[in-house]
Image 1 (cartoon, rainbow, N blue to C red):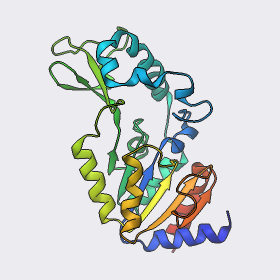
Image 2 (image 1 turned 90 degrees about the vertical axis):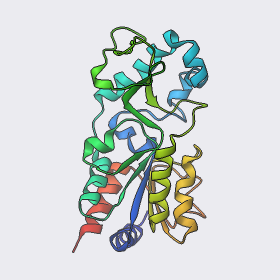
Image 3 (image 1 turned 180 degrees about the vertical axis):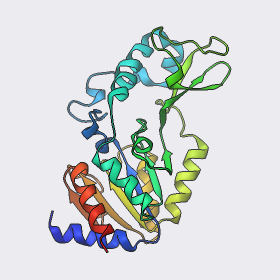
Image 4 (image 1 turned 45 degrees about the vertical axis):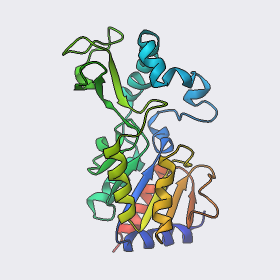
Length: 248
């Protein structure tokens, strides 16, 4: 990556009418959260079929200990890194309209981002499969698994999207509307392999918008789709991009 590419990306970001960030697991790796795919990823250690919604409903006693280990124990220790903070700074400065994220870790909100569309849900809430009530995850003790619903004693499910489960309509609509209103997409830490989320940048590109990509490795976006590809760590490049975009 050249300094010219970074400077050009900062110039475009600074002049964008409506910029949106589209983030994935790669932005949270520097916070100690492992990715799902690739060597060392979650799915290299655990069977993803156990996180299919039907399987969970049939075997909550088997799946809940995995959920606690993979998601709640790990995410409880994670803190926003410099990349999350940079996106929040861009939003505060009026250069970013919001974040559309595939992540369920809540680190964008913890960093100070206000407009965050969590495409795949969040670990911050749970829903009872019986009475359908929602609860703040922080209020649910995990010393008994599966944790019982405080209201009816039913089975609680984390409020993120399991395999075979549809994307919540309201989130999909809000994310789509934001993308359609944007003229710049800042891709960070995702290769767009998961659908339908991976189509979000295409909504912006197809309407004539610009795509700036920050990823540690080349992705399906990098060549022939992204207008500018900045290769490297998000925690390094995003703060540099933010500083340059905010220069007067």
